[in-house]
Length: 155
Image (cartoon, rainbow, N blue to C red; front, side, top):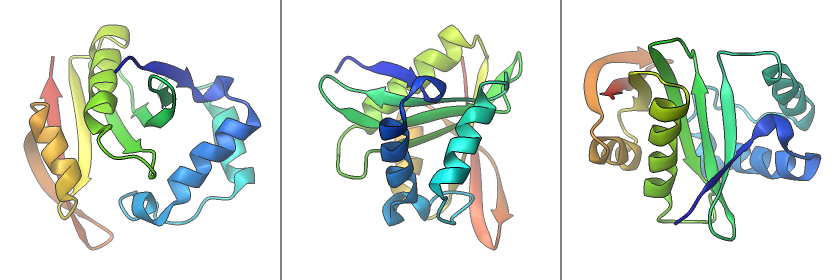
C-alpha cells in the first residue's frame, strides 16, 4: 500500500474533525494517556499550536484511496522521538502500513536513531505490532494505576 503523510497543520476543518472523531472513538480513546473526550475547540487549538513546535509532528495517513490512521512524533530531539499510532476505527489490517510509514519518517526524515513507544500492558494488539517491527521492551511503569510498557527501536 502506498501512503501519504498529511501534516495536521495543513488539514482543513473537515479532515481535522474526522481525526478528532477517530481520536474520541471509545476503541481508540481507551488506549490514550488522556482518555477524556476532546472538544473540537481544544483540538483546533492544539493543531494551531503545532505550527510553532519543532518537538511535535502529527500526520493523517492516507492509503491508496482512503484515510487509514494517524501517526505522531513527540519529544523530538536530535537522537530520539516518542511515537504514537492509531488506525481509522472503521478499518482493520492497516497497522503494518502505519508502522512502516512511522518508522520510515522517524529514521529517514527526522533522522533520529531511536523511536520510543509507551504501550499499556493490556493492549496486546499494539504490543504485538511493535514487537513485529523489532521494538523491544526497555522497562515498565505505571500510569494512572495501569501498567505501561516502554518499548524502543534503534535505527
